[in-house]
Image 1 (tube, helix red, strand yellow):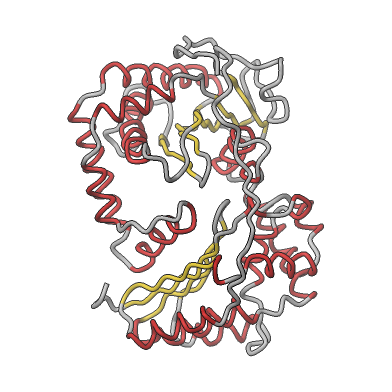
Image 2 (spheres, rainbow, N blue to C red):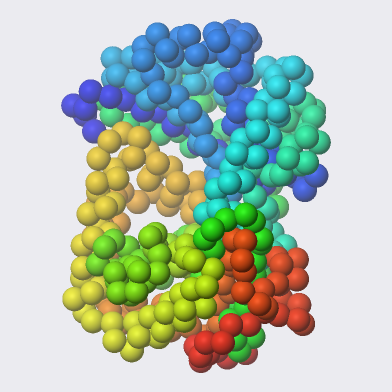
Amino acid sequence: MRGTPSFAIFVSLRVGSRDDPHDTNGIAHLLEHLAFKGTTTRPTAADVARDLDRVGADFNAFTGREWMSFYVRCASEDAAVAIEVLFDMLVNSTFSEDDVEREKAVVCEELRLNSADLRGRVDDLMHAVMFAGTGLARPVGGTVADVARIQRPAVVRFVEGAFHADNIVVGLAGTFSEHDEDRAFSLLEDIPGVPRTRARVHARGGMRSHGEIELVGEQVDSELVHIAYSMRGWEASNENRYAVGLLHTTLGGGLGSRLFRSLRQDRGLSYYVGADHSTYRDAGALNVRAAVQPERVHETIEVITEELADTARELHDDEVRRAASYSRGRLLLGVSDPRGMLLFLLRRACTDGAWEDPWTVGESLMKVTRASVLEALEQLLQQPPTVFLVGDELPPGVVSASDAGRASRGRVGTSSLGATEA
């Protein structure tokens, strides 16, 4: 991306909340906060911030279920500052006892604030059931009680297990010199590269077969009920990934998608409508999302169920072509700046180990056929979905996440999608 006036460096780790020890859920997210609190050469958070603020840099971090990233963005002429400070934070952070205790309090306030985000709540509920028994089932930030239990020795142990060169991916984008590139990778070489054994926990294979749709709910104070209509999907590297991408785009990507028309434009059921495929190294789930009035929950579920069946019967070639063109355009728009480019590349590298440039992905999307999209949809429809609901007034028959999959299950009276026993 030579010629752009900006520069970005990301240092990403192939660890996330699924790697948190069971007794310290939330520790990866806490580490994200602690990395900015001081190093052996910059003892305080103010010292770290001062050097980056001096060049007007944007610096932050984020944690996901399978990877986490620390990044700095700045003017291209200040690339050397960004590289040096970011590696100092990652290699020389002190994680003092006082900083750990203070930041735990900050994270607990963040979790309390995020509890009001009902889209996030329904997503956590979906993960808790669809990926039960694995680290993917736990919330990324943990709970307030989880975080309160974390002590400095646990943080140090987690860092020692995660910060190895073989577990780190570094990305540079924008305008930078060969010297900047050499400096970044020489700093990476200074990090020990000890082979690390990873305990791989697999999600349960195949969806449960109930013959009817299961409702799993969490009651919270809200005028709306937030919905995630979920089906077991595929891992990030699966050969179906491009067909599934066009499927969820056809269903809920953009103003012309099937569910946007049927749920919002035709019936006025929901302001926000979307579909996505949550993918991980060894598991995935396709989700349709919306938020509706409590009395219209059943109608919404029926419309989604009917639209899926209609798509299986009536998907047209021009819909697939439009979805491919839309997806390719959104992809290329998303990588038009250094930060977007690195997010795309590093997510792929950290989750499925692939180095595939966005233009190649765009070409692959354009080659997807109607038959391959239908094949993916038919596989999804072999098993009934689970519908996750978060709101105050939930319909009868809803079960909690802890009861999901037991003998007593909630049902919704819509037609079966031709489910077969797993």
